[in-house]
Length: 636
Ligand code: PRX
Image 1 (cartoon, rainbow, N blue to C red):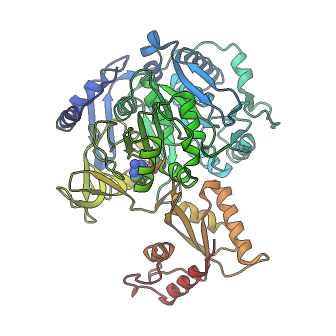
Image 2 (tube, rainbow, N blue to C red):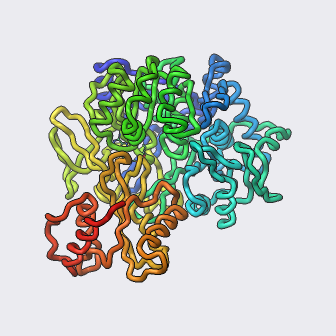
Image 3 (cartoon, protein in one colour):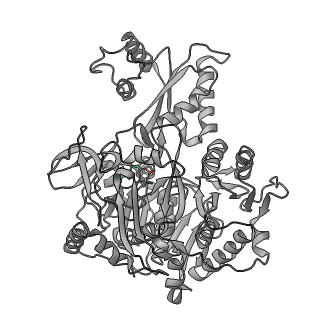
């Protein structure tokens, strides 16, 4: 069993141990897993080169740690409780034994279709158990999975397929989200037509709608699973062999494929899951995140399953058929730990208490949040109305890059404070720096958040672009990993995350690069240029404000352009990236050297009409007044 700390004293003791002797600490945690061959060296690293290797020389297969290590006593225990989009459709449950059987079978299919260790397999699927089967089958044979959130457009998908050099795509005919049916196969067809690397697609039947199947390329999941392929052995992986690639947005236009490796990721996600949520054997744990994001990877699939957890997986959305759906699921399955995003809490809170009051929610022991800062009102609502004042809230700060939770309370152990991610987890050494890179020591300080020492779960590189990895994370403050977040350490030494300090915005917990959205907008033939900034949004956390320079109009006028700008973003990225506000302007505030002064746009987007600071370097200061006036007239 993965070690578990259960008291505050225990946390303090283990934390001290983990920072004074990190390698000894992690070796001890790693001992609770099954390795085919143990490591020769625990850690080798040099942040300046973005070089980190954990458990060097060790051999393992992560799925042997989910299955073989635990199967003796867990074969008949539930692994997945699947709640479909439509509450009238039957739930499905799968035991660890059944999941193992499916994973082995699908691993044989993959191998029979020519997939080998190291090949990249993309997955673009709705939230169904087969998505977990597909990921674990890849891991079983050493193929590198790259799950793409099924809300991304065909263009975003094809960009990712090409970047990863994916040979195969695992997908479905369609998917359900609330009262909508998503034409998943049609989207994948468009994406596959735009790239040459994918030669095979495996298609799960979910909605049963008619889809075009291309002879020699597309195969039905259920047909392949009925065929007899030779059984395959679990591949022997080096601790540093890639387990998966997951794309995320950065401050430049192109998404980054973060690479997570096998050994360190396993040790870290298994350990943090058990400790943060204080998961106890038999507990029922519900993570509402989509597997297309890192939360789904680390805390719906790998972390929980490495602990033999019973995991509730939900296909739908929190507001369908009504705003009580999450709470109904919690009662129905007697959920003990619930992990969701602040944006979901805010949107449900806005819909009123009537959806909560008729629910019992007595099974809950721990509540969690992730993905964005949680405002105090939402924290209290969650605490009082969902947790009934008895469940600790774990506000977990981490990132796609960190692989697992970094700063967070441990449920019921660390005293919490609304809005605070509280304390670093074991082995995590936060460092706060000022703009010049000077370390800010002591309490009551605010600056940029860096991490001063490697942890096993951290990403090792950006797929195909190690230089970008170094530049993005290890150059701003040499010797440290730079997170891109601002942070405050208060008088008690508690950490409060203040949000991104780079050009990344967080919309409903979805991370988006402003440059990425601008690129999409600029594709519009009538748009000269654009600038996108985030603005405070009561439900989404941040909304997207697009300043669009447009000097020619076609039929439809301004409204026509705005609609087609929204369409362009939806087609190029996905519907979740559509701007909330679009302001058509004649020009942008630029310095004489042509740089857009974003801080002015940020203030305008926040609703400010004056106090823009020093504007003397602007090429045309009048433009600011013009934009302010237009912004005042904006109605949407
Ligand atoms: O700005 C931080 C915010 O989400 C960013 C990471 O986004 P992503 O890689 O998509 O991963 C999200 C799920 C782990 C961070 O840089 N963020 C994440 N968790 C929190 C948070 N901001 C405040 N509080 C949090 N608990």
